[in-house]
Image (cartoon, rainbow, N blue to C red; front, side):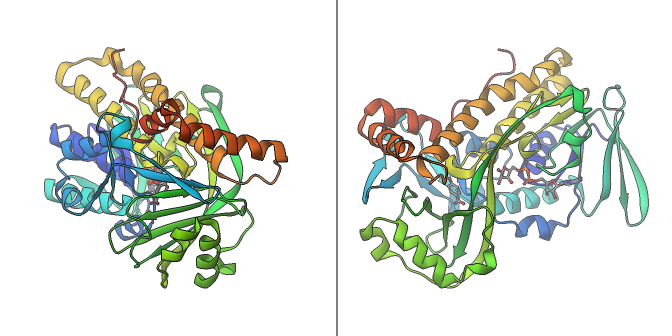
Amino acid sequence: MRTQVAIIGAGPSGLLLGQLLQRQGIDNIIVERKSGEYVLSRIRAGVLEQGMVDLLREAGVEERMDAEGLPHDGFSLAFDNRRVRVDLAELTGGKKVMVYGQTEVTRDLMAAREASGGQTIYEADNVQPHALDSDRPYLTFEKDGETVRLDCDYIAGCDGYHGVSRQSIPAERIKTYEKVYPFGWLGLLSDTPPVSDELIYARHERGFALCSMRSETRSRYYVQVPLDEKVENWSDARFWEELKRRLPEDIAAKLVTGPSLEKSIAPLRSFVVEPMQYGRLFLVGDAAHIVPPTGAKGLNLAASDVNTLYRLMVKVYQEGRTDLIPHYSQTCLKRIWKAERFSWWMTSILHTFSDHADFDSRMQQAELDYVTSSEAGLTTLAENYVGLPYESLES
Ligand code: APR
Ligand code: PHB
């Protein structure tokens, strides 16, 4: 088999890249380890920046998002039993975010790919990239007991944090930066109306809590838990009780509880690999970087990498501009490090740290108090939350 761009992984990165390339007539094949149903069963993030919304539009998958997504022009920070609204639209000259689940984005991209005749090979075992530093790279994998070889011009490693792409780069050619936080998020999804029509990020001495949503009838809530906590120890009743204790009283009083559809614990991590390319392999999305979910940046950063690689491939195939290829990593990393900073900062001011002295705790309070009472502070918060501009390949 032969294609122009071989894409490893059919998560949001791989599917979005595939769809954008497809629309420009750039041939691509996606090779995914799991089944399509499995990919859709993962409950992930839900807040899209304007840049990602625009890119989904460019990929032609805006119809259901426009009909069912919820545009949000603000969110709240809760602390010391009070709430401060961050008016995103007012602070950023009209920018907002869209609440639309990653699962739905993935579903729409899968449907668009099927409609456009793009090929995705699901349940491919032992995917391996080869000859990355030559001009004839290829993939091998096993499908239905047969070994398949896929020749290509370029490989997009869209295979997430645990994927094979990053691991295929010789260790001495990359450097990784990592910070592991000493807690996780226990998330619960339920068919209950959201407690508020905007997101609420809450700092509390018992730990952080977040009220989010997927629609007007489906809520997503999170509470900070110790890293060694087991989801089996959390009945729905215990979760709701703990969540209420961490929210301002008026909000807690309004919370509608119900049976969970899903409950899981996710660890928090900051991670970046540099550079994000090796020969003809480009790393995209979670394969190259992880952020703690506090700033809602994970999925959005994946989209900005896709944007960069997509524009690069268009230059290569439509204008013969291979000179921009070495710019991929630095273009992506400029934006990634700023989102890493924002996610780390949001995490560090809103969570309870077991090793914190009383002084550190007062610093968190003072920082929240300052940021939410200063126009400059709120503007900084808002412009990062709605998403910094995409970087240009040529700068
Ligand atoms: N071979 C083929 N496919 C693989 C391999 C492999 N060796 N390893 C992983 N995959 C697949 C996974 O099964 C998954 O479907 O790659 C896909 C990677 O998808 P994600 O982990 O969702 O990563 P990405 O597409 O970059 O999505 C961006 O940002 O912060 C997050 O929640 C956010 O998951 C989202 C991500
Ligand atoms: C979510 O809805 O899952 C969500 C929203 C905002 C975040 C993180 C997760 O910061």
